[in-house]
Structure formats: C-alpha cells, structure tokens
Length: 263
Image 1 (cartoon, rainbow, N blue to C red):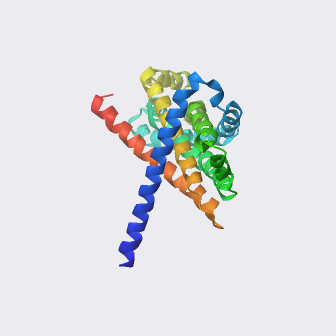
Image 2: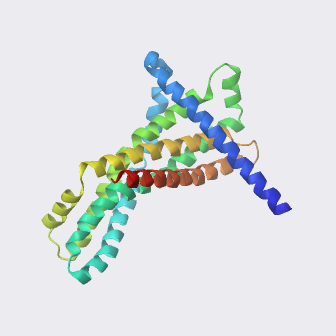
Image 3: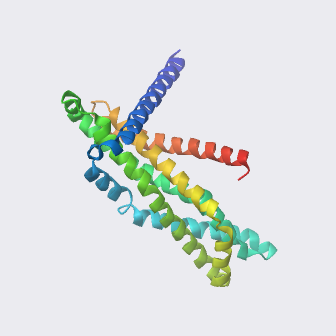
C-alpha cells in the first residue's frame, strides 16, 4: 500500500505542477498581449539582465560543447563512411543534424541546466523570504515582475546561442575532416548544399519553443518553492529535470508533426 500511496502522491504533485505551469503560461500570455497597449508594463531592465545571463554569459560553455559535439559526430560518422570511401558526406550529415535537431536540443539542455535552475533558485529565494507575498499584498502580479521578463529573455536568447552551437559544431567537424585530408572547400560546399532554409528556420523555431519551456518550467518551480531548509535546492533540481522532460516532449511532438507533413 505504501508503494501505491507514494505513486499517487507523486502523480498528484506532478499534476499540480502542470496545472500551475499552465496557469502561469496563460497569465504570461495575457501580459504579453497587453504590452503593446502599455509598453511600461514590460520591465526592460529585468529582461536585459536575464538575457545577458542566458546568452552572453553562457556562450563559452555553449560554444565549447558545440565544438566537442561536432568533433565527436565527425569522428564517429567518418569511421563508418570511410568504409565506403564517402567520408566527404560527413559534412552533409553534420549540417542536417546540427541545424534540424542537435543544435537547438543541446543548447536547450544546457540552458535548462544553467539558466532554468538559476531562475528557479532566484524566485525560490524570494518565495522563502516572503518577497512574493509582499508583491501580492501590494496588489502587484508576481508573474508580470518575475516570470514574463525571464521567459521573454530565454525566447530571444535561445536562437542566438543555438547559432553559436551550430557554428562551433561545424568548425569542429571541419577540423576532423581536415585531419582526414578532406579539402576544406569540399567540406563547406557539402555543408552549404545540405543546409536549406527550411532546416535552419525549423531549428531556430525549435530554439524559441525550447527557451520558452525552460524558462516557464524554471519560473513555475520557483513559484512552488517550499519554505524548508532544502526548498530552493529542490526547486532548482525540479527546474532542470522538468525542463529537460518538457524539451524532450516538445521535440517529439514537433518531430511527429514534421513527419506527418512530410518535411
């Protein structure tokens, strides 16, 4: 009975988190729609600070991981394609994989581990210190002051860092193929021929969706922080795990839709 009780409690907790996440998403959407009528509702200073942390501060890590990803993919795929004497097609493989799938996916996972946890910890600390309750008491909406700038910053930052991840991966692949005596002109010609406009746009659109999900899950975890000794730590952990799960689900849904449309 204890096992079933534990499963039920975890299911109820997950359902509550999803319900609160949807509520914050709806309230944030309403706040975004009201911004054109009153631009002062949007806190530009908080947006710029969150954007700097999610983009410029993360570039070294993002670029390094992207470079290593390109090196690993190039080595692994070239080892198989060399058997058929077509290792030059590694450029096409890297281009399609990075622009359509791996670029936004890796960038989103890193954003969840770096910025999603930070959003949850910041808002969670405010929740523990009763600062959010003070905002509610003064008649101010916490979502407008805390969630909206962070979600907007993540949505804008993700396409930018995704481009750096993809370019770093392509550079890594170029270095590997250069070691295998594949001319650089042949490599970059293969990259350009495989990188069509739709693949690039699809990857950047995925990046925007993933960024919104990471920030939304992180802010929700922060809002749900409990006033206990490990409350902030649990919120940060929930933000990372929930963000990665949300990214995987969204990526799967987008893949099914693309397959259904034949693109």
